Length: 169
Image (cartoon, rainbow, N blue to C red; front, side, top):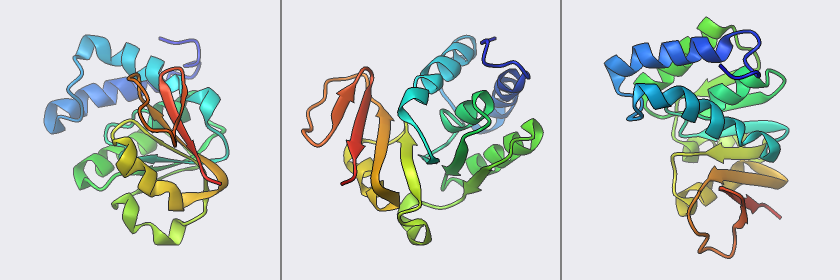
């Protein structure tokens, strides 16, 4: 397990993911690759995030749960409209004893009361056109960060390694 997993939370998360995946098909990632991918790709978000963070389409908790387990100081909201997946996220939060993390069981477009609250929107599950619609959730100067190893074809987005970043003016 990764050196950032000093308290074993990431290991416990992956155990829960494997257990629940058998019931709910949370991820199509093969079990053998899951640990490496979940930790590596999620931790790559760390240099790009700050302040209050919302993970749109949290699904199986990648990257939001992994980031929170590795960096407990982060303040994270997980937005997941699928009720079964949202229940999984709540169970993980409880089992890992995570604090300053909340599950929002709705579509991100319904979060009008959270407009302008966040410094960073993160996601791995949405296309960039749909994800850009989450810009209303950001404070001025806030950023949307998404894992996107492909070629950037949208001038509004800045490419940084395997990430695309959009900044709200």
